[in-house]
Image 1: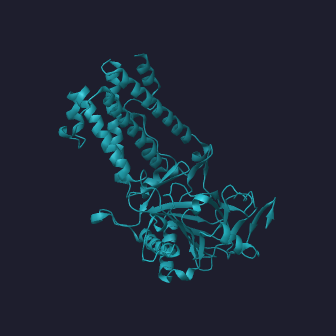
Image 2: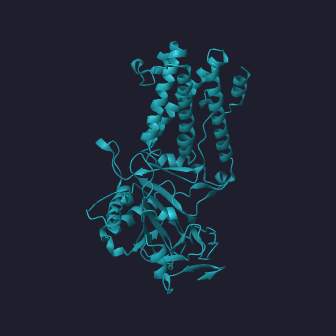
Image 3: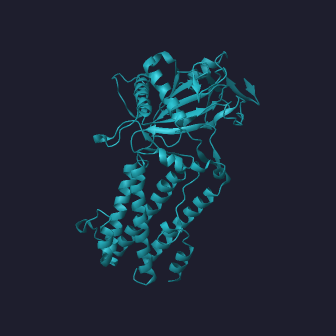
Length: 452
């Protein structure tokens, strides 16, 4: 197909196979027969459970400077305590396995996706040529699935046309998957239906043609022709090794409803609950160690809420150590508010109601944040009284200026009209002003500190 000097090929084109082998060899597409029929049945049940029970949302994401709603509805399922951040939104995974000691028991609609994940890992391992079975490495391991759903007819969404090759209406535009471990693969399971088999909300959909496609192109290359692969129900495709790093892909919407389960190896160094919990515990220790220097009379009050013990206090050898410790603690204070609490609450009450696994974890982080707020207030008051050092005052000014800037971004985000268009249960949960020990707006606090 030729469009404005940009070429893309369908499987019927004579050059399709040669271009595939030369420029897209790490893209593999497999038929439904390679996955056991029992797993197909389990996944179908899980996907419809997620849809009918309200787990799939149109995400509000940021593209460029604009917030917009995704065309597809989606949710995240994966390893316990895992999150996935993309386009200025952090998704919190519903766990697909139970936690140790069965503190949290997963549900079949989630665990079935884990069964599929193991199957896809085995296939990826085989495709990559690993002899041992299973032989999971970074290239063949997945720790989450981003589940997507779109019914182009029922949802009455005005889909944008693919702009470069005119492939058709886009369910998902050209992109590379973000925040994945370097060198990791991506596996996608596709399930679509024509309405003859499935009944959604007790309304049978009319028979629709299954004409979904995935488009592939070499990133930033207008000479190599793009390819478009038809997507049949029950098929899987794999983007192996560095394919995602060097190529872009899009999803061209067909006329029938379609689910996809996209399996990835998300980064684990900064996007897990364990990471932010360790950060908060470290900041708590720093704050209490600093408090032992400046206001030991208040230690008993704060230690009632904290697990920090006197014998654990850090010893600051120099004033520079004190300033570095304060800067680190204040950085975590800002991080837990902006990247965890606000990211969770911006997704609304319905999201929070469904997230039974994450509820106590977010409550834990909120307790740390509340304590950090009150501790910061103490250090600000000490500096205003002239007790804190010149260096500590500058650390507080820098830290609070950054926090003020980030809060301003979030407040402007809440005011974006995209959120006013959401149902009430999907609109952001905002912190009440009383929750802030100093204040939500830190302008006056910063002015007072600068005047010292």
